[in-house]
Image (cartoon, rainbow, N blue to C red; front, side):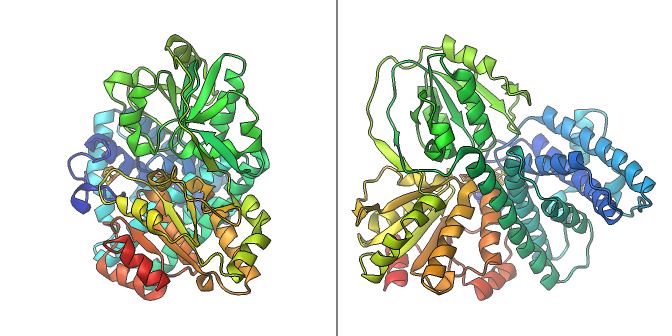
Length: 544
Ligand code: SF4
Ligand code: SF3
């Protein structure tokens, strides 16, 4: 296997025997093969668009298949076998439609005529023979840009899928994914062309994130500031993890009146701020911290656990029987709740388990500071900046991860001077989310904008502040100190680059798939830099 797509990749180079994430050699090969098969489907879909053939099932399938290859989503070989067979079924059916419409269905790229082996071991051999990530280009820099694009596409597909679940779609996003997947079957592009292709991925992702924002706020209302209990309530319990608000809503509906309290974990924390979710009286609080602490925290939870897409860790045998998956998430041996979203097995398990014996108060944290809330107090914020009550804003956002070195972010937040505000989003916040940082003129100093899925909201806040100060985002007293872990973060970074945002500090380490020359391009154009060895150094460089 060869996988270098996430921050915890082995030795900072690549996982070659087994994934640090727990991904097997077998699943890595199947993911490579699926990516290759989707390239074939994309070639046909791109030809189809030229003759007016747009297939909704192909579009939705594409984003799901691409998303399934994101880090910590699906570890189940059987599910990949189904994805592969379905890709080829859809491709052949689409060829028929394209041909009937007068389009071209003759392709030189072998991906367009790939036939999956009948059994799993044959598929694994097919995937292994591809050496997909290394075969993208023989030139190190061009290969690096193509890898960034493949990973960016995985992040983009994730956001497009989250949006589609809430009924928000745009064919330009599907068209871009198909065109780019098809383009990646070719060689001979110039460095400039591939830089353009990479940045375009970020630009298209802004659209996907805007759709997701519209889906979330249109369905569940704009988040409002909400105190989320960190303690527990006596009684039966279900914990929900991942990112999917629709799954949470359906779980809340199906558990109403059953005497079960619902707790969030990881990236589900900000869902407590949505009016149409917080209205459920049994939607109680938040248990634990970030995705990477599942193995430590889940054994302490005396109820059922539901994983929605995405960010799953291998559950240990001690609590495996309590864990269920849904959406794109899969792990062999776990019960998967299918598209009917009937959570009865989860509810049954929660009722069998003891639940919490007694109430325990562990205080609370605030969430719900998405764009509507923050911009609702924009006048106050602007006045505070003008009167110098607020000196600087920091966006300390991004993912958490398992490797050491991420204490930088905790210390950074602790050391930010008291006249500065901190906006945060995504799961990196669990390094500091419960710190009591006080307020400036009644506005809390630490504002949780939401999930990584809400990066659009943070961008809108920055754009609106720039508008109010009549300057560009780069001229605001705002610095971005980001942490990355997987491909959702990669595509958000590409989006920030596509918006021309400069001086981003990135850590805890730089991606293994960025070659030295490509890094130079990013440094020259965007002044993007790694975080310094200590937060003090970065704070001094930023604040003087
Ligand atoms: Fe390794 Fe990350 Fe790939 Fe898992 S996703 S195999 S940890 S690089
Ligand atoms: Fe990323 Fe898995 Fe934390 Fe949603 S998606 S932020 S790691």
